[in-house]
Image (tube, rainbow, N blue to C red):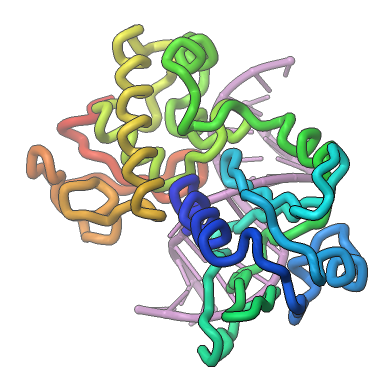
Amino acid sequence: MPELGDVDGFKRVLAEHAAGYPIRHVMVSDASVLHETAVATFEETLHGDAFGPPWRHGKWLIAPMERNGSAAAPAVLFHFGMTGELQWAEDGQPRHRHDRIIFGFDDGALCYRDMRKLKGLRLTDTDEVLSLLADLGPDAARITKSDFTERLSGLAKQVKSTLTDQESIAGLGNLMADEICWRARIHPRQRLNTLSDSAVRRLHTKMGSVVRSASRAGCVPGRPSWLTGHRDDDPGQCPRCGADLEHGRVNGRGTVWCPQCQPG
DNA sequence: CGTATTGTTATATA
DNA sequence: TTATATAACAATAC
């Protein structure tokens, strides 16, 4: 699930249910999702403290702790890999099988749930957060058109692999990249240095609308009017022109495009 | 058994 | 050096 929009959804879950309330207990039921952090340190640091307002960069969610407002304040850094999520569970709701870490509050629990455990959490501080995020490009939800075109124009790389490259732009994943290429009518394998200036600007515009919708929905909407709504169809029809969709591999990932709208 | 999966990273290859 | 391909990670589902 987790691309930028999903992580924005998780950020809202944390902000609405957990931030500002004391953490009554911390349960690490699978320590393999706790990276470079000792279980005891994690529990002791968080117990009794509260999360402050969380923020997001790319696919990372950062939850600074409230008690220490200094520059070196501890923070919990989340990455959700391919199957991670943050869910709120009211008191009395049964535990989910894939809940790996649970933060207990007075009226419920915040659950880090992850089937595949490809990524996870770490306890860090503000300085280390900045160094961890230093390698990422600007966030896809905030990058300006001029910054976007400056960074991407003329690259010899394929459009899709650049969109999903977190060092170029942070936050886009496999589904959003396909959706953006489709809306911009650009073949995912086309090279950026073969695109016109207006095509690169169009990519930025379409990226903006896809990102905004996904952030609002907390996921990549699988609506029938979106290409993403037809990924699993065989072969499926383009919601814009009706042509049979094409399926293949680009950048090592399953990719869908419309051969009519996105020639290449 | 085989295939696939919304992410990232190390390694190989051209 | 640059771009790309592949596998690996772990846990499922078909």
